[in-house]
Amino acid sequence: MEQADSKAEDGHTTKGLPLLCYGEEKEVSSNSGTMVVGADQQRVRPEAETVLTFELVSQYFYMPIMQAARELNVGLTLLKKRCRELGIPRWPHRKMKSLQSLINNVQVLQEAGKATGEEQLRAMVEMLQQEKQLLEQRPYVQLDEKTKRLRQACFKANYKKRRLLALEAGEAPRSHKY
Image (cartoon, rainbow, N blue to C red; front, side, top):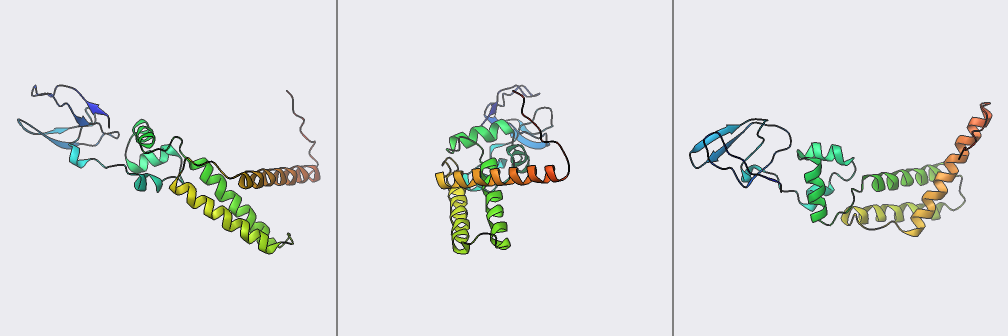
């Protein structure tokens, strides 16, 4: 945890007090009594801080890291540092979001009944949900090859659908310039 080393107004050093990220006024007790520190000094006593455990942090995997830091009332740098300590090298929001949209795409196919393998689609949804649960428990795990291929196939199908709709609407196809 980040710590502040500065002299208080009464001359005592406030070494070892964790930094707050969003300037709230807190009472801090020192050797000479209690003092109130404002947003400009941003210090609070150690027992008032929230402990960032894996269980607490994992509840916020479904939101961007900036929003999660705001919700947890800690700074972005502090959250990233604590995540590295907990064994989370990258914030898994985008991976979780991608898996959820993939599950939604397969469920839409399932409801539309376009595919002949209804049982196969159900098995895919089940596999994706299991992978999502695994990712919640171990966010450092790579996606399975089957999941990656399925995601790529969905991207390709959505691209073709958008391109077809654009051609039907009379728009000229865009060419890539490199």
